[in-house]
Length: 285
Image 1 (cartoon, rainbow, N blue to C red):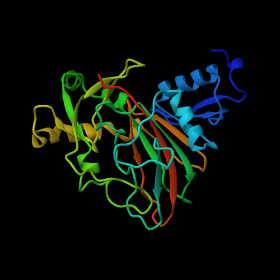
Image 2 (tube, rainbow, N blue to C red; image 1 turned 120 degrees about the vertical axis):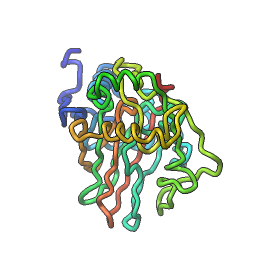
Image 3 (spheres, helix red, strand yellow; image 1 turned 180 degrees about the vertical axis):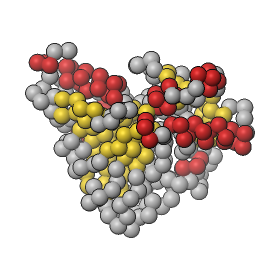
Image 4 (cartoon, rainbow, N blue to C red; image 1 turned 30 degrees about the horizontal axis):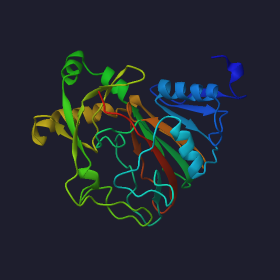
């Protein structure tokens, strides 16, 4: 694609060796032309998580950009904004002890068709802390031994929201500014391959996470944990991660099909206000 057809100043700059790139010269509040959208899409696939600074997004503009990639998710447990059910307000007040997303995970892997990606916009950030970490699940898989890769290629695992959104779940704990519903009935369980093939890039990625993966198919939780814990550690090794320091107006867009993320909870006594839109995906294969 010729640079001349892209906006002036369009630039993609990697922020780490494993994944992550910052994009300049794009206003996400506008209706991106085909060439610019394709360049953003290409960067998303190449770098797995992309970042934009100084974006002024209304809820409607936020949704419009996300819809360029697919239909939008309404979270089954977290109430969206009034009038914008697809937009989740992620707020931690100064008095709150727990944050939202404070553990390594892949968004909505507990659903039958997990999310394609999530787009997070920073409205108010603390004076320090609150960074988000991302980990490449391509590299998590590719750096395993050949024998273990061959074994995992044949395995499936069961994912559920029970540990997070069940009656005693971590994310279902009360927060002063978020409406998160505890699951009254048993949370559903869905089977996904332990290794999934990305539908657009064709690369294989490890697909288990500590928040939502309960056990391997046809195995007990007890028998599953030794290998699962090994994979959870493999999935989040420092050398396959990047770290993003938020600024007001910044946007992060990550690919849940090949990325895990972790919101750090190191800004107690300060307010943090983000908005997230999540794009529907398909059944992992």
